[in-house]
Length: 205
Image (cartoon, rainbow, N blue to C red; front, side):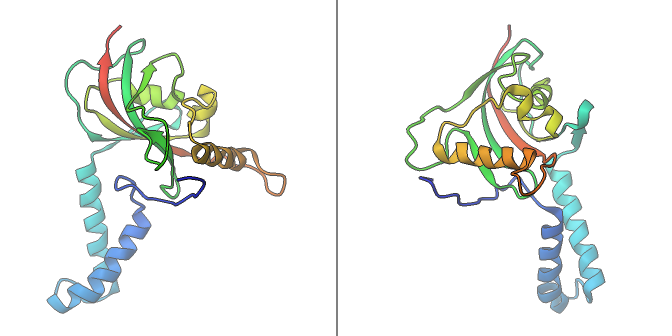
């Protein structure tokens, strides 16, 4: 983005509170006239119902050891990945709280000279954070998963690989490191991060 940080929220990242609030407001204004809800409470119930339906369509959340969680957005087919196997993946890294885009492959930023379409990962080599490796186990070609990484299983576990290649991405990661470690004015905290991947190719060892 040539030095400009423009926040985007991907369609896969949904904040439940914001979604419910929006549905409540829309329901109360638009649907009360059609008899679907008659007050704030009934509209809130309708909003909760719609969120539950959306989450059910998105698939169940899987919890792994160490606090790693992922949701399978698309199910793949063919041979599945195990430790020691390699895969070519597409991915994007997002701030967990806001869904703010940080960087990814393929690169979404205009003007970038990086034309890579996929990133090569060998499970067990820490080409990606430990929690992503764990979430890749069992994935097949076409599998798409959104992984929520606690700090202990996040980018520090892979020495910050995969590294962003653009200046804007590098600055976003630098700011995220400041959140984790503090900046002298305020202490750091164990912020989580999202890593969403799609498997483009499976390479069995």
